[in-house]
Amino acid sequence: MRTRVKICGLTRSQDVRAACQLGVDAVGFVCHPASPRYVPPEALASLAREVPAFVTPVLLFVNAAAGQVERALRAVPHALLQFHGGEAPDDCARYARAYVRAVAIDEGVDLLDWEQRYPTAAALLADAPSAAFGGSGRTFDWGHLPAQERRSRPLILAGGLRAFNVGAAIRAARPFAVDVSSGVETQPGIKSEALMRDFVAAVRGSDAETDLV
Image 1: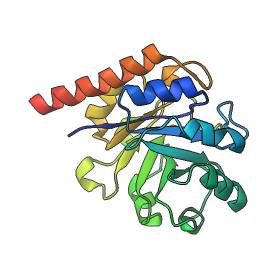
Image 2 (image 1 turned 90 degrees about the vertical axis):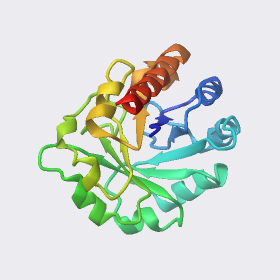
Image 3 (image 1 turned 180 degrees about the horizontal axis):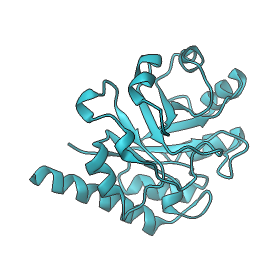
Image 4 (image 1 turned 180 degrees about the vertical axis):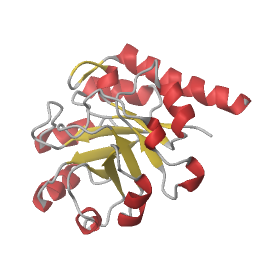
């Protein structure tokens, strides 16, 4: 089984092009103004033009007003939505678009409960708790995640992933996809093509090892 790869927090056209040339499955744009990786609405369309067919653009929001989400969707009409704040199920589903619901995995948090609460989510994204709502560079205990056979929704694994640990993360969690941001950066929002290449290669290497087992 091939693990999908999403690179999030992109802010520059050259980084979007490089990520897509490396064969990633999705690229993420942060629409949360408090983030150092924030992409204002007027810049979204130009970044999205660098995304080829069959690569999914993802727009990330944190407790955004409906008008902000709708404006971003006008700039990137074929985007997937990703919600990281306190959005209720109806808030996520109101746009009639496929969406991902982020879950901060901490003691006492059960991903299966979130599956029940967000039955319309295309996937759940498991991340480390962070006041910054992602991009913290911190991992969490992958042992807190339910086993693959118990999950009913696709799992996207995030939180402190890098080339050196993503293979172990995939073996531990068996996710549908992995999501990286700070782990391929030289500074917030500025990606390194070499780090992105190493990350994608590590994911592909882990998949190849799994196929041999």
